[in-house]
Image (tube, rainbow, N blue to C red):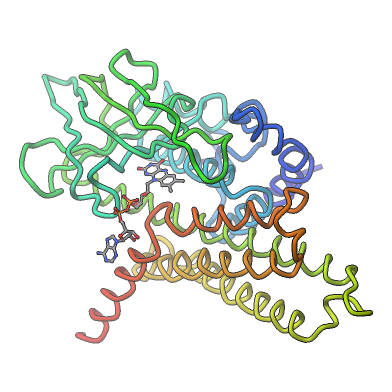
Amino acid sequence: MNVSAPQLAKSFVRDVVNPSLAGWERSATYPRREVRSCGLTGIFSPAADGGLDLSYAEAVAVFEELGRGDAALAFSLSMHNAVAAAVTRAGDEVVRARWAQALVSGEALGGFCLTEPQAGSDATAITTTATQRGNVWTVSGSKAWVTLGDEADVFLVVAKTLEEPGHRDVAMFVVAADHPGVRFGELYRKASADFLPITDMELQDVDAHLLVPPGQGMAAALAAIDVARFDIAAISNGLHAEALDVATRYAMKREVFGKPVLEHQGIAWALADVATDLEAARGLTRKAAELLGSDGGRVAVAHAKRFGPDAALRAAIQCSEVLGAYGWLHDHPLARFIALAKMLQVVDGSAEIQRIVIARDLIRRTSE
Ligand SMILES: Cc1cc2nc3c(=O)[nH]c(=O)nc-3n(C[C@H](O)[C@H](O)[C@H](O)COP(=O)(O)OP(=O)(O)OC[C@H]3O[C@@H](n4cnc5c(N)ncnc54)[C@H](O)[C@@H]3O)c2cc1C
């Protein structure tokens, strides 16, 4: 029987993530074996490489299902899939031979290194530099916020190739994590998702394989981030939908002052507003899926990435309140969802950065 990708994601969440998440959290262990066998490690990679080759419209439901389980795990899959897609679609024969099948099958995990200690929202402030000697490139510098640091096998590293300001010289490289010049820092201590390793990364004369040539690296990184932002919008809708389901089920059963919580109009209306926000967020995400890769794609994604996580955070807080004191317990996912929605607001470009993209488009359209 052929199982669709959203069904695969749904059963992964139901049968693997939900029963095991607390254990992964307690042991602070990334579920590598489970991720390898989940069947969702080649979402945007070609079928010829063993990938699912999903359209963005098809991928919406996959990331929404993953977001219902755990947004941090879903985020790591989004990032891995961005790496797998770049390697399978843009890699030369050498890179493809080493990494394409390994990434798509999930045998190898991928990570993405753009952010540096001094360069977060302003990616043009990066200073990590690649140097070419003959045909060989080496990369040196410091990266920050490396998700799957000390866990992934291969990283896409965005680096400058000249000692001049600006980003016109930026290129993207494939770097093997086991090169002796790669060092990972201490695990970041985070508000949530102890199982997801995030570290600094030092690179000292590390052999690097050119993936995107100088001059095209920043545009390629931003294009990859557009897809990641779209994934995050869908993930936040999943978190939002699950929070609403949990709160509605609870409020239908729990009685206060002689009737179910949901029959108190203040609660029913609050949940109605959460439901309206969810419909709006899903609409923006569907539109982003439609336009991604075309002219209006970047701004459509910015609308979805700005609205979705903000709405999901409001939803998680509201739904937690519906459960009263119980909303704070680990028996329900709502306290965890509040921390995760906060994370979704920032990863792959904060809400403020999405507003900048939207405002620039407003100005451009109004000046035409
Ligand atoms: C869980 C997690 C995982 C991550 N994983 C990765 C990863 O794997 N690889 C990677 O490369 N990066 C990763 N990041 C980094 C992430 O992309 C950056 O954190 C993000 O780009 C924001 O950068 P910053 O935190 O340095 O904020 P800053 O750039 O220092 O911004 C600080 C504040 O100012 C606001 N701000 C910035 N510029 C403006 C402006 N022009 N106008 C108004 N407000 C502004 C920001 O929105 C923010 O609120 C991760 C982050 C998180 C939280």
